[in-house]
Image (cartoon, rainbow, N blue to C red; front, side, top):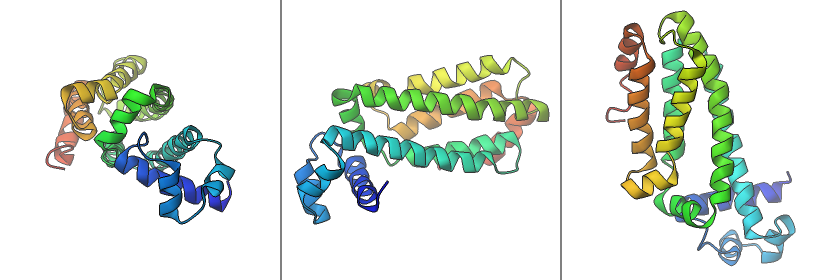
Length: 203
């Protein structure tokens, strides 16, 4: 990716996350970047293509941050909490306008995001739950069942329909789901560590 394209994606990312993408125009982006519309269209044939590129960049960058946490040497409970904190930081950047735009105007983008996060969650949860079971922190149920329940719950709660209809923020929905899920899959030994880390309480 050339430098010019990277700068456009970076700037558009901030615009979309703060004010949504539906009412943000290419004219507005070009004017605020002090470049011509021709420069934008040289790199992206349409606003839809730019929105798609922003979503892809956003997902890849956050996947990289989560991978960094997965590679840290610590127990599985602490590792999972660290990932939740990273994800919490990610979702807190997405405001209501962006969420509403995805919900109303670009359900195909949400499907791409949902498919991507499901794939990534399956991968990192498989590793972490297997580690946690060996350490005695997670219940000895079949990992496939724990992973499926976890992912299904997160997908159901952290999605535009649920959040808009129930007037939650994405961060509130995520924290609520995580606390319930963790207390359902942890052993007593694991719960002691989780409670000590105090995830979600006034953070």
